Amino acid sequence: MEKILSILTENMELIYLIILMIFVGIEIIGHVPSVLHTPLMSGANAIHGVVIIGSIIVMGQAEHVLSLSLGFLAVVLGTLNVVGGFVVTDRMLEMFKKRK
Image 1 (tube, helix red, strand yellow):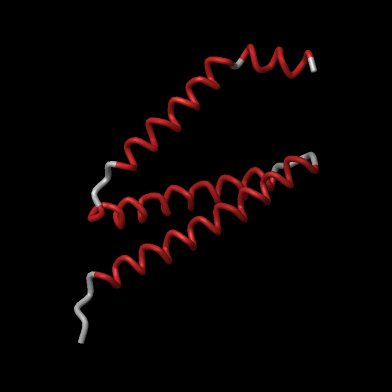
Image 2 (cartoon, rainbow, N blue to C red; image 1 turned 30 degrees about the vertical axis):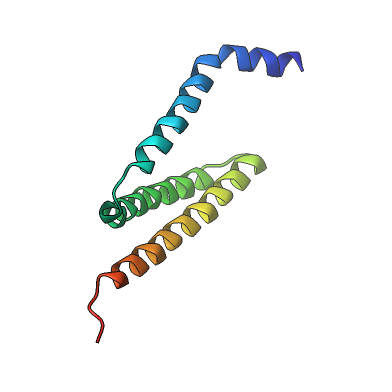
């Protein structure tokens, strides 16, 4: 228990920074106009593609079961995020097509 508390106190600035980034991100994303959501989703998909590649590299160099498991989890979740993002982007682009 003391070890966990010492780790938390050493990284308190980092924890504050992460919490601040969460609130700023929510505030910024909440004010994005609907027209810009499709390009932003496409950009996020590209970023998550890089995350998947990085996760595969980490899995290739993993020496412990925990590293391998976390790398696999990152690949699975990143893939779900990319596929879901492309599905949402496709559905949004369908809204702009003319109906016959």
